Length: 588
Ligand SMILES: [Zn+2]
Image (cartoon, rainbow, N blue to C red; front, side, top):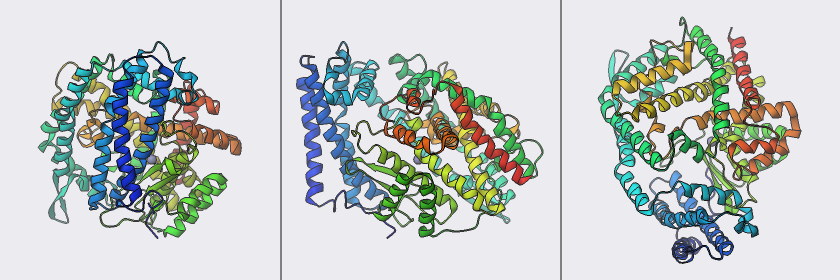
C-alpha cells in the first residue's frame, strides 16, 4: 500500500470517537475561557490555579492535536474531501477562541512577584520553561483594547497585503521564445527552467522572468512597505528598539549566539564564492557565475529507484548509524506512517506531522523515484525521529524553536549523502555533491543576502516609504555584499524581494536566518559525530528530547558545547568547505 493509515487516530469523521472528541474539544475550550474569567481575577491561591490551568490546557492541546491532525492529514491527500475541510476549519476557529484565555493566563503569571511559589507543584515544575516563556510574553502585551484593535486592523492591513501579493504573483506570466515560438508561461514555470539542462533555455527564462516583474512591481512594493511599516509600528509599541529583537525573542535565540553565527557565516563566504567561480568556469563563463546559471545541473543522475529500493537503502544507512533510528524507520514503513506517491487531489511537497498522543508520526511525500526522493524521505524520517525522542515529554514540552527544528532532518540527509557518495559512478557523484553544495549555498549565502536586504528595508522604511527603484537597489547591493565575486554583477536578480513569500508574513519577520542556523547546527552535530563516533549518539538523542525546554543558546550544554563560541559553528562550516573541495577536485 502506498497510502498512509490514519485509523489509529479515528476510523472516520462520522465515527462516534471523532464526534465525541470534537464536541469535547469545544466544551473544554469554553470551560477554560469561563474558568480564566472567574478564577484569574486575583492571585490568591496561585499555585493551585496554575496547576489547574495546565491540567486543562494540556487536555485541550491533546484533543486538538488529534482532531486537528486527522482533518488536516486527510485534507492534504484528498483536496475535495468536504468533511476534512469543514472540520479543519472548525478546529482552527475553536482554537482561536483560546486566545483570550491564554492572554489572561499570561497576564496572571506576569502579575506574580516571582514564579517560585507556583513552581512548587510537580506539574508546574515540569513546565517551568514553558511558564517562564508565557510570563515573558506578557511583558510585551499592550492593553486589552489596544490588542483588540491591532488584531482587527491586521486583518484589513498586513494579512490583506500579504494575500494581495500572493494573488498577483500567482497570476503573473512572462513570455519566452522557444524553438522560434512565443509562449506565455506562469512565473513559477519560468523559474523552474533555471534547472534545465539547456543553457539557452536557462538564460531566456531568466530574461523573461525579469521582464515580467514590472507589471506588478508597484503593487507588490506597496504590500512590502505596508507590512514592514505595520510591523515597525507594532514592535515599537511593544517596547522593542529593533524589529530583529522581536524575531530573536520569538525564536528563543539570544543576541550573542545570533551574532556569533552570523559572524562565522560572514567570515566563511569566500568558501562559497570559490565554488561559484568554479561552477562558472565549468559552464564556460569568465569571472563570476551569472544568476541564470546558479541552479544549472552539473554531472548526471538518471537512475531511478522503486519504493522498496528506497526503503532498503534508507534502512541500511540508518542501521549503520543507530539501532533505534533504524527501528523507528522500520516501524514507519511497516505500520503505514507514510503516504508515498503523488495522486489526484493530493498536495505537493513533503512534510512530517507529529501525533504526540499516540506516540507516532505521519509523513506525506511525493516520491518520484529520484535520488532526491530518497533524501526527502530520510529528511522527513528525521522529523519523525525527533518526535520519537520526545514521546514521553508533555505535549507542551514536545516542541522545538524554529532555528533548531530541522536538526534531525538535515542530519539524516547528510547521513544518506555521505554513505551513498562512495557507491556512485563519478558523474552521479558530481551531480549529488553539486546539488547539495548548491542548496547549501542558497541556505548560507542567499540567506545572508536576504538578511542584509531585510535589515536595510526596516532601516529605510522607518524613515518613509521605499520606492520600487529603492527596493531594487537595496536588493542588488545585498546580493553584491553576500555573493561578492562569486556572481557576475551584470546578471544579478533585482526582484528577489518580490518573488520570495518569506518577506510578506505580517507576524514573522527575518524569516531567513533560521534556515542558515538550522543547517549549521545540524552540520555541527554531524561534525561532532564524525569526531566522537558512537559516543555522540546518546547525547544527540538527549538533545532532541529537550529542544522544547531550552533556549537555543543554552541547549549546547546538553552536548557539552558553548554555542556562543565560534568553534562549534566553524567546525560545521569546515564540513561544508570539505564538500566544496571534493567537488572541485572531482571536476578539475
Ligand atoms: Zn524539514
